[in-house]
Length: 132
Image (cartoon, rainbow, N blue to C red; front, top):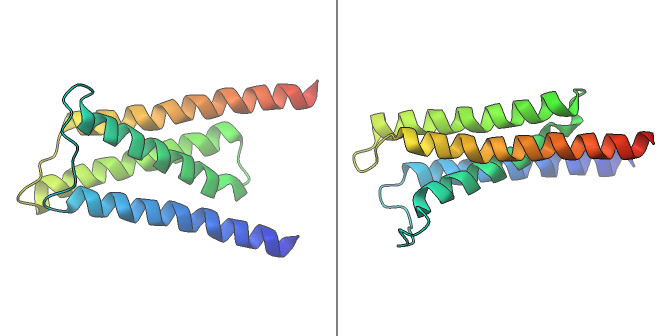
């Protein structure tokens, strides 16, 4: 049982780190892949989706911390938004073809915030179901 927990712990952190590195790479590459679709504001949707997944993986990685679910998911969302802010600064400071945009950071925060709210609601429902 302990061996399984250890493997799950490593898998959770590995997924979080791999996704974070992929987001870093895509954020800093000079010509990232793009889909031409102005209908949905595709760039902002990509940001929201990427940082939603980053928040999920962070919350999953942090599940071994002895914290309340609300605090753990708040930390996960904060880490995701912090990474987004750092990457916007790096784009504006260290790349020639990319720019820092407040709209991108807002999309990152919205994606992370949606997961935070969903996680808190689900944890409350699961807690209520377990209590009664």
